[in-house]
Structure formats: structure tokens, C-alpha cells
Image 1 (cartoon, one colour):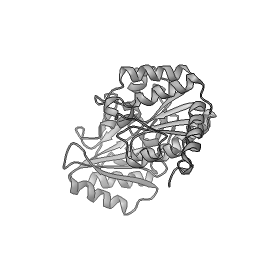
Image 2: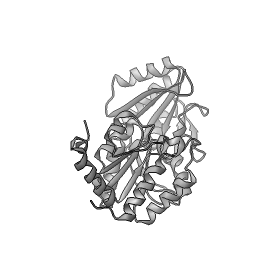
Image 3: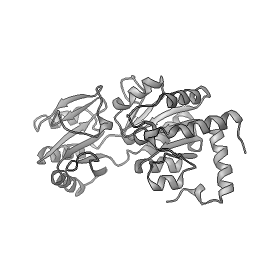
Image 4: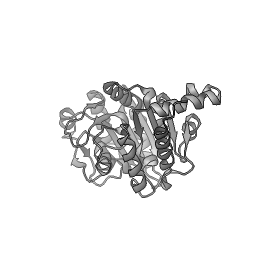
Length: 303
């Protein structure tokens, strides 16, 4: 569905966008493909600009598909204490606070069934993603980089311990990796009975015969988690600046007051965006918007 404001005449749309930019109280920013540069880091200039934005009283919140433990080091780098929305909305937690603020776990019966299917699948390694660790069938399994960080513990699991592991802890996600045939067969088995689940199947960008399957609660998404968070903070979604690059960013970007897309973003996101950077994330294109935002706020733009 097209963003409502994008249907307005350009002069009116531009005027509304400037007002929302001036009134913004929170920036919700994706990490991979957006904030992080070609080295997978936050550039020094980017960090300085974010610090200046925070000094103006604007919250800066990470909203990412990474596990919280794989995102929190970037909060530490920026000296942020703001909540991190992680696992595409399945977990909301402040850095170094122990228990999450909120989680959206897979229903236990579904988690047991999915775990059983993954354990029985040939040529597939699986991980049950919990709030504090990964419970894995193969300690050396290849998982997307957003899930890997030295802060995440890995606990082995087998058929005998599957039920007790699932019963003790909420399963926020199942992640499976393996051959094309193995992962697609597992996908077909889970998709045949997808009760309350959101299922994502995709191939690796760096390993031609490696495929991934991610399974979460159907209600776990960035938009719902962000809506819940800003409601607790007394902030309206129209007071949010959303910054992203991928399809899992479309929903929360569409509902936010002002949307930013980096050059490397998917086409639908760039079409709805109020600001598209001329450089991509590898060249720290996000700096273009951060500078624009600071200039607008300091100038007191209201019209």
C-alpha cells in the first residue's frame, strides 16, 4: 500500500515533511545496510553526528534483525542507553539490563514442532534463538552475520534435550541453515502448518549453496515493536524518523512521520522516502541525512 503522504502534491508533501522533521522526537534506525559502513562499523563522523542529535533531546533507537547481543556493542560505542528493538521486533531490551523489556515468543507447541522438524532434517543445522543465547544443533553452524557476536553463548541441543530446552525458555526465533534441498524441505514441512508463525526463506549472498530459514511469531515485526515502544514513551509515530534499507523496514517506515532511505535501499522504500541519500551505506551515506536533520533543527524549520 502506498504511503498516504506520498499521494499528496509534491509542494504540500514537502511542507508536511519539513514540519515533521522539525517536530521529530525519536530516530529509529536499522543497522546492517543502513547505519553500518562497508567495514560493518559506525564511522567516526556518523558517531559524532548522532551524538549531536541526541544532545538536541532526540532519542536514537536501533531497530534491527540482529540479536540484541549483536547490536548492543554499537550502543556501547555511541554511549547510548536507549532501548534496542532486535530480532525484527521479537525482543525489546535496554543494553546490559538482564531481562528484556518485552518479547514476542513463538507459541510453545509450534516451537516444539518446529524444533523437532529441524532436528530431523538432513543437511540442516538449527538454532533456537533465546533472549540470552543460541541453542544449537551444530556449534559451528553458519548463520547470518547479524546473529553472530562474541557476547552470544551457544548451548548444544539434541533430540533428548529439545523439549526441556524449549519448555524452560521462550523461543524468539528458529534459525536453520544448510543445503538448498535440506532447507527447502524443512521450509515445506513447517509451511504446511504455519500456525501463528512468520516464515522467511532466503539464500546466502556469499555461499551459493547455503540457504537460511527464519521462523518467528507472526506478530513479531519491527512496526509492532516500535509502536509499542513509542506508546510507552508518550511519542506519536508521526514524531518518528525511520531510517532503513530492506523489505523488513517497509512497514515501520510507512507508518512513521518522516522516512529516510539510503541509496542501496530496495526500490519500494526509496519511493516512499522523504529523503534518499546519494551515497550508499558502505560510503556512510547516512551522514547526508544526519547533517540535513541537524541543519533543519538548528535553523528551527517550521514551514
